[in-house]
Image 1 (cartoon, helix red, strand yellow):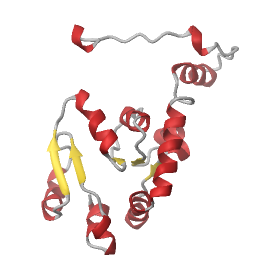
Image 2: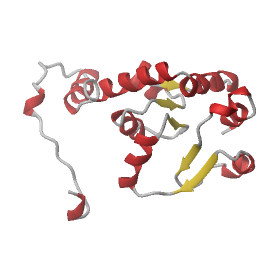
Image 3: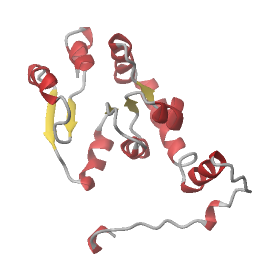
Length: 178
């Protein structure tokens, strides 16, 4: 929020897209609430249904994921699958899992602001990042790839199983979710 606010107060202001905040206010929200109210391009819309997320992913110039508590990064995968470039907070797990397919924020606010500006202001870079992300989702982040990675990391070396032999099984709560 603070990095976006600084961009709003710079020469970049005229081309800055709206920042849509999705989800219920989280930890330490009160610390940034005044900043959110001060910048007219920030729109906190609160909680939305999971089936509505795809519209936001597709409509976004970039997906900013400032979570320090996410283990796997499922929202990152969802965004990448929709062709939306990702800017994420840094964690070792996220960095190892997604590498150069996303832009990682820094502890340094100036560096984070510069990375935000590059993704939002450079359409060629943004398009390349989106394509790299889609390619990664549909190659490196498949079920068979992840399973092989887990087995390798625990020392169960085996020959890779062709992807056609896997099936996807999902548990659903309601019949209409199928």
